[in-house]
Image (cartoon, each protein chain N blue to C red):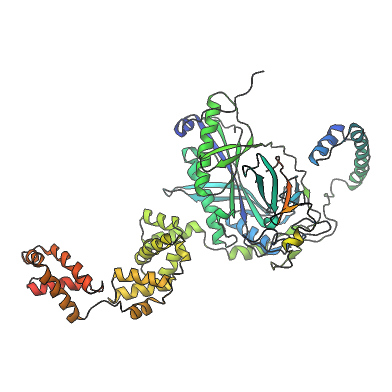
Length: 98
Length: 505
């Protein structure tokens, strides 16, 4: 039995700002359930002594020197912007968030 | 169901403190002064044309990869050490996901459960010298967001039609310092709030890891306040006043929130857990957005950045090079200079500690250094609408100018004129004195002639002096100064007058 409920999917859809119909929610609940159940098998195989892996390569401290590299002009920055004004990206006023 | 009361007339501060115990917590964001951004090689600079300090990483373009700025990591470790924190031997970055146009990636790269520094403390000094210890929960690395301007009728987000985004600030390295809940502050809570932010600013300046200019947002404070009834130890619901960007505003915001909470609680209402906005003009806060402890940012380890490991050797090397803590330095200087508490406080408030220290190091007496920086230089700076340190007066110039006074070649009044000419770019004090012929008239002949003239023109004064009213000599000094264009030595004038009248000085 999957641990993913329809309420979980609704919550995720809300966080991701994706509007979903009832039918889509049903379908996604079942599909995400299958994915989570599949990944679960890995968890069972790994055992408690294996820490969760976020980075598969044993690399740490890949740092960059603090030296200025290439930079865009305002025109280049805005080249893909759907809309712009005063060298700035123009976006709809959004009230939630900070 | 009756509606819960969430607004009421604020209580007076005194009444609020009689009934409740304030609990505070601070999140201070420090922008680092690295040359480049946290995860890209675009410049970290303030005040440039919009969207000209960005590259593909800052704009979150698809397929781009961030790379950590090593200098920023070093700055974070140094700040952690200065805050007496433990440094994590291993930590990762995490994605904090939210939708808002200030971040083009739809997440902020931050740290979540593995901050680079944790469990520290900072002893902050209050105005009367009392030390209050603030416990530090953590200091973690993250990136700043872009800057939004809300266009429309009001200039505020309410009623705005659209927003304009400048990503120059996007990706600027930040360190967020989070305190543990601060209890036991009582009526000194607002003062402690100011002293804490001030101490953080001093430390990042001393470490030279931030420009620390609050008016530019280099140091920004979110102030959490809650109240619990006297005798209780259960924290109340908190409000979070965002981006309070001056030390005085932090103090006032805490003061106001204590009063506001107390008013609501005393009337039987309950506090809404929310962000608040500080209103400088009314010195009040206004409601922002609801905030829940369960805000779901779906943090997960940043897959595009490898973990950071910090060896004991690295920590030891950075610890060995830490500067003297600002509070200790102040104590040392105050003792060594012998200023009164008030004088020293004024020097700190004027931001002239460094200038005076350097002037003293170059040979001026502490009192002389203070006299010039706090006096004439501050006055000139004020008249020219700038900061004393920006006037271009070097400590060496002060030492030279004072030397001319001590040698008796100019008097105080002339020295002040020389300083102004120096600020106007006329050269060194000695050059100005020579070029303008400002040297004190010590030539007895010229001075004696001027004194004789003044005595002849003021027989009534001479009579008084002759009758023993020595104070009246002052009335002769003016005309002599006038005659010598201010270059007479007042002591010398007095000497000559007394000599002429045959009086023992």
